[in-house]
Amino acid sequence: MKFSKKVLLFLSVMGPGIITANIDNDASGITTYSVAGARFGYALLWTLIPTTVALVVIQEMVARMGVVTGKGLSDLIRENYGVKSTFYMMAALLIANFGTTLANFAGWAASMDILGLSKYIMVPVGAVSVWFLVTKGSYRAVERVLLFACLLYFGYVISGFMAKPDWFPVFKNTFVPQIKWDSEYAILSIAVIGTTITPWMQFYLQSSIAEKGIRKEDYKASRLDVILGCSITDIVAFFIIVTCAATLFPSGIRINEASEAAIALKPLAGEYASFIFALCLANGSLLGVIIVPLATAYYICEAMGWEAGINKTFREAPQFMWIYTALIVVSALVILIPGAPLVFLMILASVVNGILLPFVLIYALSLVNNTKIMGEYVNPKSYNYISWGTVAVIICLAVFFVVTSIMPMGGKI
Image 1 (cartoon, helix red, strand yellow):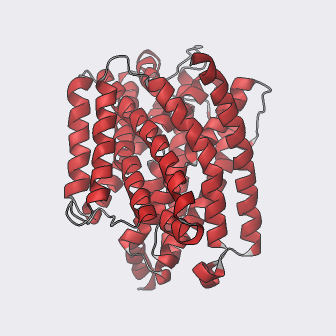
Image 2: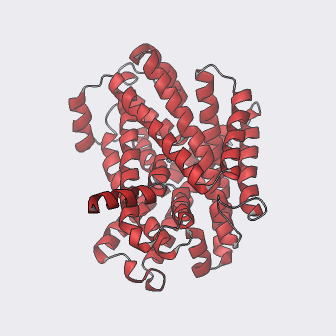
């Protein structure tokens, strides 16, 4: 009886952790993992283990704050650090998330092209569909759609097995780091970590937990939701790398986009593997189009003290709904403009994300250790050592990533 009650409790709480972590495997994430496998084979698989640990640590802290306070992260930042600093952070995050939304629309357009459908039809169809889902649906309805869509990520697991990898080197490289003193290897190592832990995730996770109304007594179930979500997302990432490492790397096929990987897989792993890869790219891209603008609307409205939530109407939360609508419409229109500077905008978004992530994590750590806010739910000392260590590593990686991104970008400007 107790076991069945625990299962029912988990099912009622499940959602925010699994959705947030899995949708981080959007177009940008899938591209990063595909390129990593194609260029270095299995050599970068080991990075997924420390990345998973870091992701679990950070997401668990943020989820705990959402459960204990019932508020979003930007809400807490505004209340404790003032409107001015919060405003500047929200403005920068708006720029970063606009670029991320563009990347996801680009992934959606590319996957539709592989499937033989015109982007000039499918981009508007995708934009209208996600807009209607969020603005006209309830939180529960949106969550159910997102959880179902997360199941489609397991298509990458299928494509991984269809690629027929040699499993001995796969597992060896997963648990035994293979370091290469190569600048491209270093940048891709950082990109794997950077694409998995992003600023928008922290805001969306805490806001969705607050809106769902998860209580303190449900905290253990919520923590399991987070751990499960983080584990699943990196299992998916593992199979994306394996797929490209087993097929594209031995043939010396270099790619720059996930869509190129899907096309290249056809003669190497078969038409079905290529189709599954493209379909999963479309799924991940569209989910990113839903969540990233939604996260943006959440944290801007919370920071400014405006009403926010999927359960609200346009009349009840006009700013929330219009911010979401504007991001969807503008991003879709930019994708349809021939010759639009998409690469520059995406690189800019990555740089801004890299700059902001350490600030977001420091704010989160300061808040989660504030007894006035968290009471008995502050981090224990041992957890703080892990947390601050994780943040220190991420700051170093973020600085390196920003510098290496700005250097080539500066040459193009």
